[in-house]
Amino acid sequence: MRRLLHHPDSVAGLALVLVGGVATYLSLQVDAGPSALTLPPNFFPLLCTIGTVVIGVALMVQAARAEPQPQPSLLDRRVAAVLGLMLVYFVTFEHVDFRVGSFVFVLATMLVMGCRSLAQLALVPLGVVAAVYFTFTSLFSILLPTWN
Image (cartoon, rainbow, N blue to C red; front, side, top):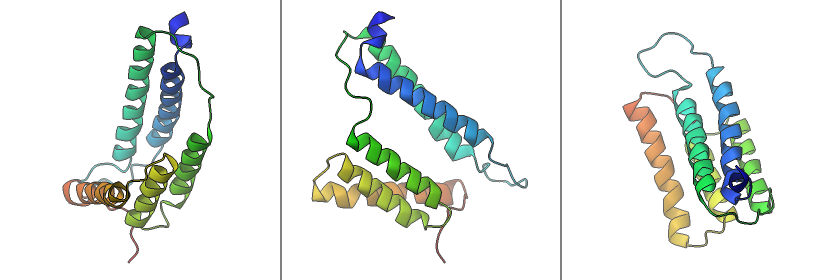
């Protein structure tokens, strides 16, 4: 247990478990709405939040098995900036076209985290938005917010 507390991955893993747990709880509160033949509206959020918890647990297990290392600061500027971007994305999700909001969110996150490759900055946000949009609209028949 002492080793777990002295490894940076333990802090990251615990944070993911806590954030994922709260987000899972909030996702379970989403109203199912009228019966439909498509997936419920909380399917994708639950998939993401449960995945976040699983990744957090995996990081904590990895930290327990690793050699102790000094802890970094808990919140640096990059992490705070990404948390701010996530908050803005969450608050504006219903009002901004999914494709535009997601593109800006992915691009801004990449810039904040230090990506400077122009090819990646152009292709990754486009690829993420296209993959998510077509997966949910075509495969799952879930409508995402768009401007008409």
